[in-house]
Structures are given as structure tokens and as C-alpha cells.
Length: 217
Image (cartoon, rainbow, N blue to C red; front, top):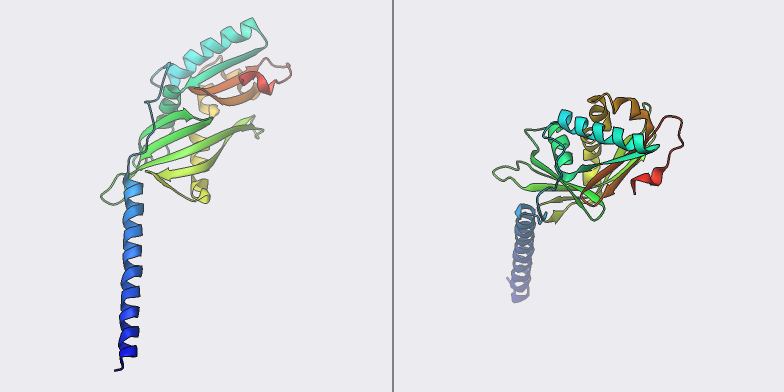
């Protein structure tokens, strides 16, 4: 074989090894990023309105009743601890999503949970925006997931699309309002939701009173 042929084989072999090394190195880098612990900051903050949906509903029902006695509009705030309790209670896959926690960061609801990935348990973090929209049975909270991370590895935007329905169910106000007789009559009169520092503000108005979407702040 000519030296030129040998040189071509050597170059081809080396190029293949370089490509393989890049692939393996890239895989190791991605795996390292995915398994790294994300910086979520402080644990979910209070105040806590109870350790169960029923307790939270009773506390917020009493608070909302006081608000509406004082005026035609009332606003209550579900803290990060409250949202964590609700998310755990409404977790659609408790065996799959474990150690669920809810925080508020930069105007978004940030939900974190550990999942199984073979022998590893990375942390998945969903960054969620919320909007109140008309629904067939009254206003509903609609979620969007502009960012989904596994550890420190950001996934493409479409990766969070499959979680939207589960997040909508976990953060639904239907169950919460149904738990307390002071809240249930107000279900159709929810006028706003807003992610505020430390939690989620929910506003209602007296029946027959015009809605003021800005009342949540």
C-alpha cells in the first residue's frame, strides 16, 4: 500500500477517534449537567395556612370572608408552602414525582421534583407562568412551561408541553374552593390570579360587581 493510502487510513482513523471522543465527552458533560443539583434557593416560604387542602381552604375562606365584608373585592395569597401542600395533594404521579416543592422566582412558579432515571434520581425543575382564562365552569388557571430543566441541563421548549395538563390539574382552584362553604359560592367570581413575591394571589368579587383583573396586584 502506498504511503498516501496509509496516510489516508491514519487520518480517517484519527478523525473517527476524535469524533468518538467528542461524542463521549459531550455525553459525559450532559450527564454531569443533568445530575447536578439545581440551585433552588431557600425552602418554600410561609406563612402556612395549614398542612392539608381542607385546612388551607378553611383558613383562606375565613380570610376571604373578612375581605368581602370590608369591600366588594377580596384577595388572598397562597404562599409557597401552601402551593407545595396543594401540589403534593394533587400530584398525578406520586411514585414518579417525589419531594415536590413549589417556589416563586422572578415572577414564575417554580416546581421541583425528584424523578428516577435508571440508578440516578435527578431533580426536574419546571418554570411555570400562570394566566386566568374563561372556562366552561368558570375562570380557570392555565399554565405554560417556558423552561424545563433536568438538574442544570435546560431542555428544549417543547419538552414541557406534556406537563401542562398535569400542572393545570395540580393548581386547579376547583377542589380548593369546594372544600369551604365560604369559598364555593365565589368560584364563578374569581377575577384574577397573579404570581406575587412569595406566592400566588387569588382575587374574587361580590356577585354582580364588575370584575377588576388588576386587584391581585
